[in-house]
Length: 189
Image (cartoon, rainbow, N blue to C red; front, side, top):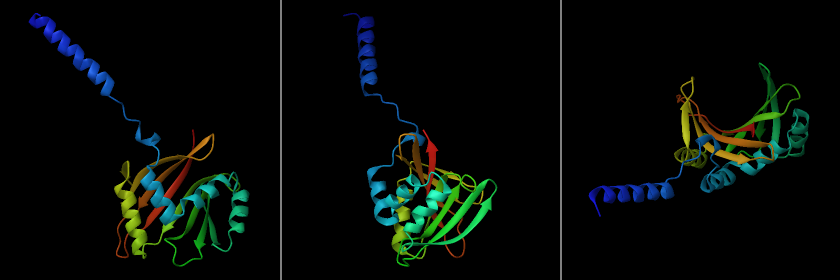
C-alpha cells in the first residue's frame, strides 16, 4: 500500500472514530437538574413544596389559596410592588427549618407566579453547608451588579408548557454573612 493510501486510510479511520465518539454538549440553559442536586434540594430545601406551589399558582389568587391551606407552615408577611411585579413575602413558622420563608414574584396584581425564592437560613450551619454543596454542583454562574453571584443548577419540567430554572443566588458578603436564596424561575418552553 502506498504512503498516500495509508495516510488516507488512517485519516478516514480517525474521522470515523471521531464521528462515533464526538458528542455535542447540550447548552447549559437546557440541562436538567442532576439527580444529586435534586436530592439536596428535596431533603434540605423542600423542593417538592416549591414545585407544588408553582404548579398551583396560575394566578396570584390561586397561589394565595394554596398558601392559606398551608397556614400551619407559613405566615403571610407583606406585599410590595416592584414595577410591574407584585412581591409577596411569607415566613416559615418552623424555626428549625433550613429556610426562613419565601419571596414570591407575580406578573402583576393577579398574574401568574413567575419566580419563587426560598430564603436560606444563614444562621443554620447545615443549611449553609447544603447551599455550598449546591454551589459546588452548579453548571454555570454569573456575577450580579450588587456584588453577589447566581449559580445555575439546571431545569426541571413543571408541566407540558413550562419548565423551572433552578438557581442559587449568593448575595454580596457582609459583616453579618452571605444571604442565600434558592431561586425557582418559571419559563415557557
